[in-house]
Length: 396
Image 1 (cartoon, one colour):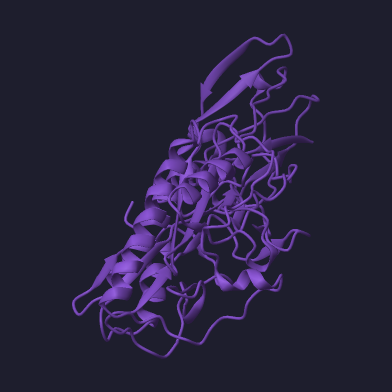
Image 2 (cartoon, rainbow, N blue to C red; image 1 turned 30 degrees about the vertical axis):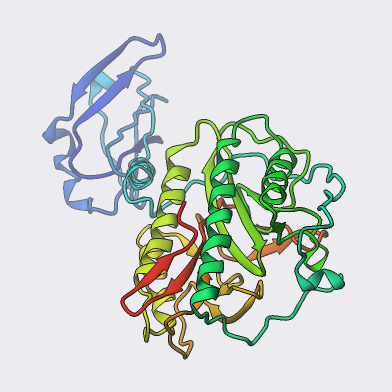
């Protein structure tokens, strides 16, 4: 028996190659298949042929479908040849092209993270804070504080102090972003942030919060949030979220941004861009009297357009004289009751991933990564609700 592979009735040509590797291309003659054409269907992909010699012939086309078997006579002038052709799986090729187009277009299909998995570096000791700088009350315990039920709604003086704290946080974050480059360690970024905050007479809010050992959170690549700065050097192509919160004159200002390190691939750049757009769409849903659930709806709609995941575990929160309080701001679709009030301050801080939304936390109790190793990005602002919208207090 001689095996002949083909994919569809519309056969363009046969590639014929002899044992001496001399080859010719022979157009497929219609009469050659006339006696068996009725046996073919769109689901035929292979057939067998009786032959006098032990020669073989292979017919390939653009699309590989289900196999079937028929018998055909071989023309005499082909019986002395060993005829082969490279089998092309058109279905596999079509799927490959489809994936490439999606990756270069809508982004609805994403490559897995090919970077080495994130590893913990050496964590240096806690940096000192001058005695004269006022400290937040949670430093009296190593326990993680409970979410306060007290809504952060401010009078004019409170709003002025919130603006000052948030403006400082935004300046510190902007400076931290200028430091992002290959070879710098996140520990070095932490030191720069720490010094800038205390030089302004403020306290770095993360330091000592539930025993957190550093003054800023630095979350690299697949780290969703709460990354602890350490000795790991940033690599070319990394992304890093820097989360800054300052405590100034009794008020917290909270903000974060994902920065690109060196030359970042287009797929990751798109994730970062879309994540920032998700934050913007969430903010656009805010004003006095608006329902909190609109924030998650707007964010989810935009992220889903690109096939991204919206992390549910981590939420926005009220912020002001208290670091974390009600309301809880969900970034995914939800049925949370409640509406916004003029003078209220809270954060929106969506985490968007290329893959799944499940997470895994390291033994340090803080560093939280995507369970599937996919890249994640995050942006955050502190907002003040007004009658007609929301004022971004931490505008970069």
